[in-house]
Length: 217
Image (cartoon, rainbow, N blue to C red; front, side):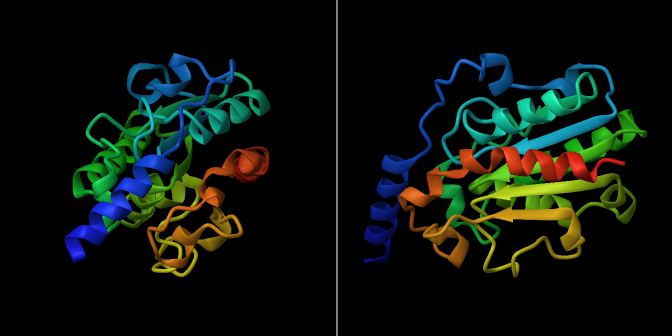
């Protein structure tokens, strides 16, 4: 019975998984941003973990949109980096105790550490959507206090560990964290039941980008 329920939930997740964003402003480059690993250091480094089944490393919905909004606000100052390829954003990984895999968490943690070591003067921003929120949540918890201080702001869209972690990232300042949980999005209540509300976070991107930009000193 439990296996059948799991398969039913996985099927509903797959049917409702985020569709690739066809908006012209989201290019293949934006879906696969790798600017921390491959590019020059910038004043600001934005690290993002995508939702389950999304394309690329940044995803194809709110990840690239948030990156572009930050770049528009802080022209020439922002490098965007998606979590991947070790983080595969597989649907079944949502059912693990941490809401994702240790491999994904370690990869994200490594990106924060890379930003701090490669670009010691950069101010780090981060974000995640759906399963990606669990990736960022767990990774930030594991950072040293020095690197946590370098992380200036985090946005979490459709936070799958919202109920479990009391609406924030344990051990990380709440005033540096912004959680977006749409009315009716049941993943924010400690379940993995996907409703239409889980796919409405594009409307929160402008406010999220303003919050992140406002955290930069």
